[in-house]
Image (cartoon, rainbow, N blue to C red):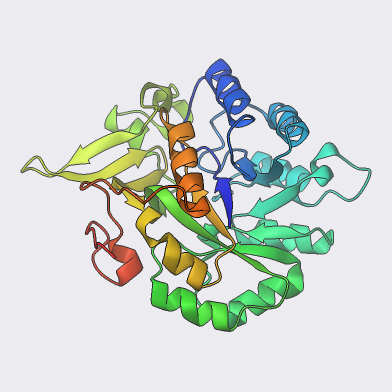
Length: 295
């Protein structure tokens, strides 16, 4: 089983991002997703910067995937997407890497250019017919939506086309929803287009609590996340039995190396899984997402 590092979901300063990926190059991770998926106003790294990061990671022996935005809202977003997803050989350096399509416009562009792609978790793949459609358009790997259950996965695996890999979101705050509005900017009475890049002040998102003081959600710009960390480390034997090829870890401000090494040790059989009491995995079992079920 391979380990992948998902695209960064938070907004970190430019040098901090470069330093993070320099460390990633030395981690025991097989696949690394790079690129902005949450908000097009996050400009600390531009596409050319991401391509430089991707090239360095590939030199370190990693498979690199360029992830696309989840919401396309402007002509400039579309222009960037075209450069990323529809390039043909010789046109641009982006063609040297696999693309993860996170909305159907990216799927169409990649398919039109006859480029293989990863069907990202926000495409909402819940049926074998959708898997077959995406495979016919060029998808070589697909990612199960994070809110899906093991039962759903088993049904999809039974109808999965040949030569198509399956990837699972296995650790991180769950990306629950995306919006055209920026909730972080709204918290400070700012418009999205003049947000003052407030997300830089919240490198792990903004915690949202109920009136009773209980952790409820995490606000991350246009993205709403779970308050708790989704963790399928204890379910790794189930994932192997269900034919999962790749487990995805979402990057964190601190401790990403330790997370990757912990997953690697459990996969290799050199360590037993340890799951914190404040983690969650309820969706996997068809329960409320904030619950933790011990396998």
